[in-house]
Length: 413
Image 1 (cartoon, rainbow, N blue to C red):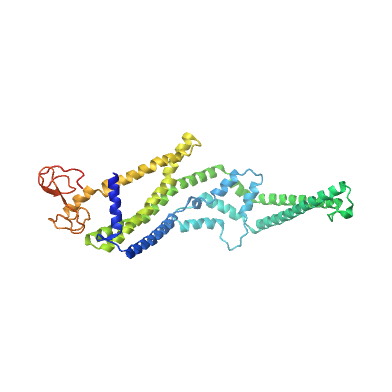
Image 2: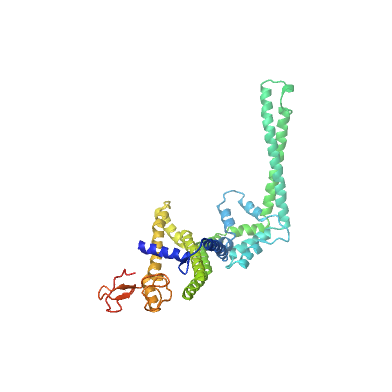
């Protein structure tokens, strides 16, 4: 098997650096390599663009992450926090959240979740000038609270120092602090009263905001377990299938290129258009490279990975490193299957030999030769071998002798 792989690789490189079986000069080889890199770069750009053509799970369910974060939070102010998050400062001309979600459908294939569109509708209703003013007032009061708290920390540090000086009996005129302990204490008490008042005012404003009908309707909506369960199920299903959808679109992009390059290459070989055959061969290889990479990427993160991941999780709990063992065994087996497929079906030497003998072509290079040519005038390959039974010359690669019909050695290529 390794001999066949070596021979296939040798033929691959031979086709990649020769025109009509003549080696390329260095300048031509450099030009071909530059062209290869340029085309490969743009192939990957095209693959990236087409992979984003279908709507992604985060675009199809744009409210899922916000909703999940809300449900997992344990803070007592989480209702206010999500309402506050809905009240972004925006101008009247800015696109609403619902319109933003709907734009995903305009630029991508697929649909945005109706639940998320309803979610956006509720958030847009909250985002009105009156509620924005409440949020702005709360923010201003919170800034004052932060300033007063910082002032208190500074005073507290000086107060502690002054108090130590007083305990030590140090005269006031020798103190390093300008404020006496009594004054510092009074200022601290005054600031604390102001902080308490501001916090209470903010609490009242928050309750006022949450008491609004639009806020209450929004909170009721996101607390609906049935709605969230439906949303979560759709999101996870979309995430499961998205790598497969991406691979499908990437294959749609690559397969026509591969088919066109293959047809041009075969046509150029038949017509002996050496340069076209060489370039089309390079294109064929270039188009196969990203396809193979994307298949391996899919195997790593796609449906197959999710399948094995779920099995390992169910059977062995936290021993998820066992997935790596599966891939270490699985990937070589898949690679072996691909190699076997191409060796036995696509690039089967004996099947190629049968086809080429019927068309009066060289068994090795497939160029046109005369029926009585013992050696190919293009590559010098010997077309015949001696029959083991009648010792007459018969075609290489064919199963039976053309003179006596005796079966030939299977390794006669």
